[in-house]
Length: 183
Image (cartoon, rainbow, N blue to C red; front, side, top):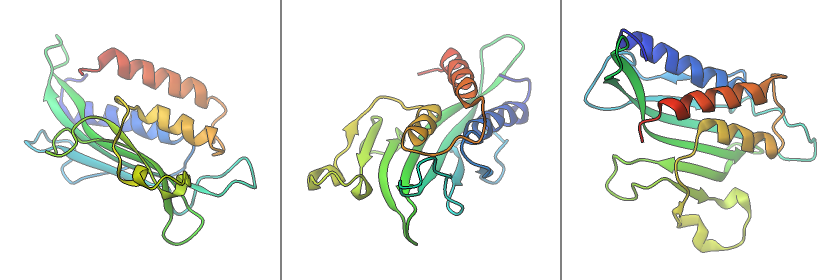
């Protein structure tokens, strides 16, 4: 939480960048006027393609991480820190980056502002090679998923961490998120 909206957003973006830096040198790109409170949510997008994530297992196909994160800047009721950033939705995806188009493996969605499926859910895509066609269009309920969890999954799937202390970073940022989480 911060004294000004810009401080709250800077802190929020810094945390997201720290999380993604565990596996990627890429830079998050916020929408225009990203530090100004607005009626609609701001978006930040990130795609690690190219270059794809470095894999620790050479036989594993290369992964790419895609992030679309919506957030709002809201007034806080905390004394001395009137502004904070809250998540308004997300789409975190891992895809195979072995060709020009890429093939999604798994995508984590939460878009409560849409009128269709508002619950947090997972899409298991063609890249997962599950062989059960109905899963391609299913919205598998998941509960809220943190970006830290998706980065851990990428590492479990073979992405090579770029930082020796990646576990400490992910644990600390996730713990801080859970402490200030609104819903």
